[in-house]
Image 1 (cartoon, rainbow, N blue to C red):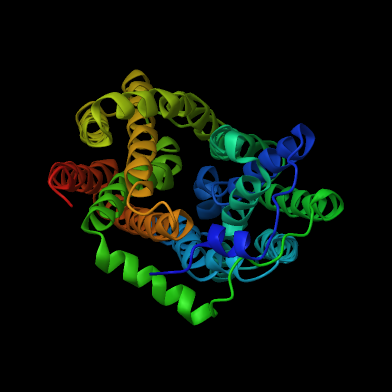
Image 2 (cartoon, rainbow, N blue to C red):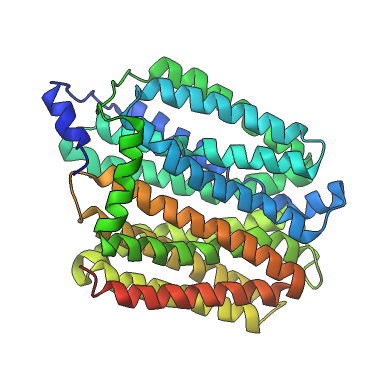
Length: 401
């Protein structure tokens, strides 16, 4: 059985640091600012087509590269938080992220923008170092509240990233947005360097052993495999939609730019409200009831997108329904996997989140290819297939041991 971080910490006599309200606020804001980097490029796709004279399927690779980069970083970087002193790891990752964002701002071709996008995705997983640090610093009776607060910052970052990026890209330039983001990461390096305590490694396991333990969890728990694959399909729908919305909205009858795409992200923020509600329903009726309902809601939203095209009202209703479904499924699936092994929740989450973001990368790529071939109907078709698979997996998971 993989080594428990809490067990090692207790053996070493390490005591949790005090987490003040001020430090919690800094960590929450840092989480939001860091995760936003993965989503800045989504409202920019139409501008990439213009500036690089590229085809839609080529620029659709930019969100894909961010998503697959995030999945790579989750698997290969996140486990290092148990092995390397956390403050040092966070600061070095943020510094690398600032460099990657600068590379995106200066990219001379779409190829180099793709390289920068991959690096941005990998290094944005600094979020998965900040959240466990907040939990470590909190007292045991406040950990649930701390997780909720920091996760709220993460969701706010995802929500506001598209709105900010769309506005800045239209008013200034998309390169300016990446430059601003690079500067914000340098500010975080300075702020976190000043306020974060040093937190020693909590395990003596080798890096290879830590990675191998992730595979052991995948093999051992069928429920983890089903939850991860189900969320991957739901997130594939989410990624396919947002990776191609800018391409759709630049065409008639919308004829809208990056700012409008960003505002759609703000509307979709209603999904943030689903998290606490889904948690309460999952406590009463079990997480699987929520997951199945969420998958069905996502499926309905894409049926609406496909059959009522060109309607801003249908688009808004569908965005709200889709984001509600995605967020509710995420909370409920995570709730179910944490119960599998209370001594290894961070690694269970690594396996789950890596699977989920692989699904997002596939959704971005497949949705972009389908848009290039068949337009918005093609993107919706990809998502309808993925949502149907998610619904089937959610029903299978009811019987998983």
